[in-house]
Length: 393
Image 1 (spheres, rainbow, N blue to C red):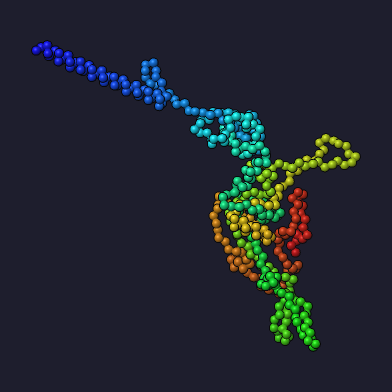
Image 2: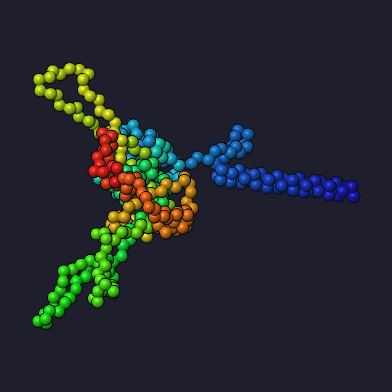
């Protein structure tokens, strides 16, 4: 009886040992799988003690050509302007658009500005300077979407351009002044029309008299009436001034330089040749007159406006209507409805009183007020003024 108990106890102990061994085996097997997965997934390494150690993942890199200095448009790429640099494969530009050899880039011409540290792309380079024109002008790059560029003339006085105070990047309003006259609706000619009296001779022949300007009206002075003629050669036009185009963007003041590149450029002074020496005079040092700087007087301005306003400005130029540009405050793009200004508007809104007719007057007679004569020619080079009449009489 006692022997059977001992055998039963030994079997239980043996079974426990077997179970413990199986559990330990399964744990070892799971750890090995974990280490293997870790090694494959995270590129882990196993140290001498058998513990997995994670390491940084290695990212594939590709050597491509980059700019190592700022290269402006139109520059022939120098050898020291580019270099090879490793670039992450996942961040590479479009396949075939970059270079992997600096010899393919050196000697090419920059079609656009290349910035230091940026990859050099094939579309940014050309072999001929004439191909740079395909990028367009600086003016086109500055125009806002949906606008058009139109150039209008400036008068030499500076009155219509805020005394030449308008600069590139400003915003202006366009003021137009119109002169209206009465015309014959059918002839479309200035009134009054010429009138010719038709008479019938005793022979029955019709005779057309000499044309006279005026209009025929009945009068007790004559059964045939009278012919009222104007006292002046032509009728006086009626002036109307109105704000037309608002928020016009000043693209450029003056003529554009050759090539259309004007952003950030500094005008180069033209060389002034020394005057020839008089015959018989000896050449001496330090006697050449130094050229003096002259004021720049632009005669044209380019505005960025809507397509419809481009037509308005073109019509005004073709109609030879005086154009005045009003400078707007910086950042102010609001619109303000305005009312056309006429003589009647001035009298009503400013309480202008018409003078009475008096039995006396001033001598000499006042026939005109002081005004600036737009026909006056200013010579800005010599500060002299040439005019046929500066008194306003």
